[in-house]
Amino acid sequence: MTGNDRHPCGVTLLELLIAITIAGIVVTLGFAVYGNIVTLFSRQSRAADDLRSTILMKKRIDQSCSRISVLHRCTDREVSGINSSTDSVVILRCAGNTLFDGHDTIAAGLEKFAFSLVEDKKDARNRNAVLLWEGVLVKTGDWIGGAVALKR
Image (tube, rainbow, N blue to C red; front, top):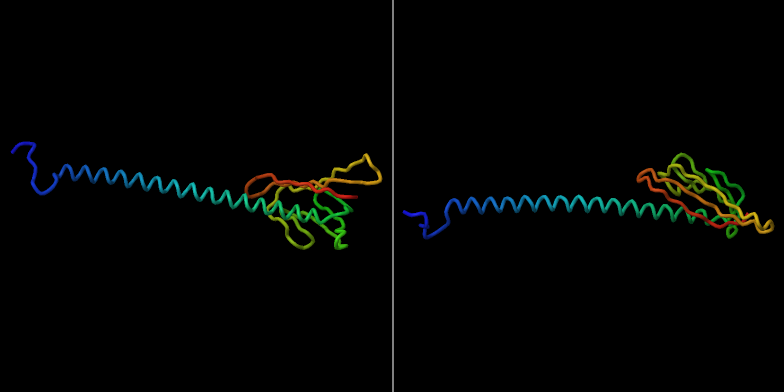
C-alpha cells in the first residue's frame, strides 16, 4: 500500500478530524460574535430608554413651568405663580430628589435641581423675566435644563 491509496467508499480518519476541527472553530467564532451582538444591542436599548425618559422628564418640567404666566416667588428649590388661563396658583417645588407640581410628581431621580430667575431691569413697567431650571439625573449623571419667559 502506498500513501496515495484511498478507500473507494469514504474519507480518511485524518480528513474527518480536520473537518471536525474546522467546524468547531467556526461554531465557536459564531457564538462569540452572537454574544457580542446581544451585549451591544442590550446596551443600545438601555441607552435609548434612558434618553427617552430624559426627554419625557424635560418635557414634563417645561410644561409645568410654562403653566406659570405671572410669577410671584422664586427660590432655588421652589417657584410659585399664577396660571392666568385658569386663575389657579401653580407651585413647583423640589423636595429631595423629586420635583412636584402641587401634589403631583413631575420628575423623580433629580440631583442638584435648582430654579433661578433672570429679570429684565431695563423696562420698569413691563417686568419680564426668564425662569431657568437645571438638574442632574441621578441614574445617568446627565445634565438637563430649560427656560421659560414670564411676567412679574
